[in-house]
Length: 212
Image (tube, rainbow, N blue to C red; front, side, top):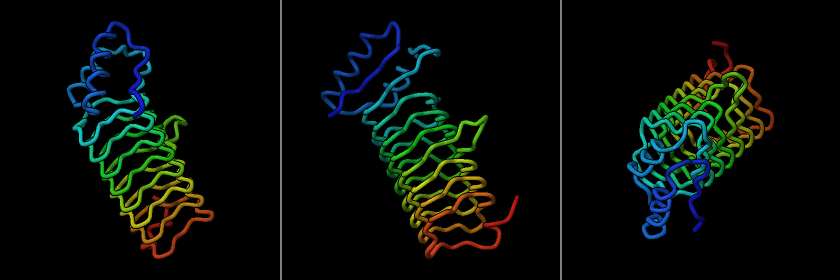
């Protein structure tokens, strides 16, 4: 099991050592643990929490922006209404997680597993050139109603069977994506790149290619 890593946090070495020792025994963190780390970390530091086991933990409404969660296990976790702006979630396991109405502007989720996750109303919108990167992410069967993917990098992502009704995909890069059997009714694909995308069995109407 990969060790949890925390860097650039001043004045809390003992606390972190205690948490790491606890993880070695129980392999799990709680909401209280995460909040404690956030409260005692410097606002000017980049917090690295890669490889943690946060399975099923309620992290709703927390500010988790700019944190390195590379390869972290968020399976079935509650991340609803979280601020994950510019978070590094490369290869994170978010299978079945609740990310409804979360902010993910500039987030990096390349290679992440979001199968059956709930992202209803989540926001990945490009802001100031900070594109969300979801290249190769797995959204198979995910709930993506009203998600804002405007300008996002979704190349070769897997959306098979996903519910993408009323998604904003304006200007998104969907080259090589798998949209087989996806529900795209009401989605906005204006100026999006669908080169090589698999649209077999996708359900969409005329609004899909219209400008809003």
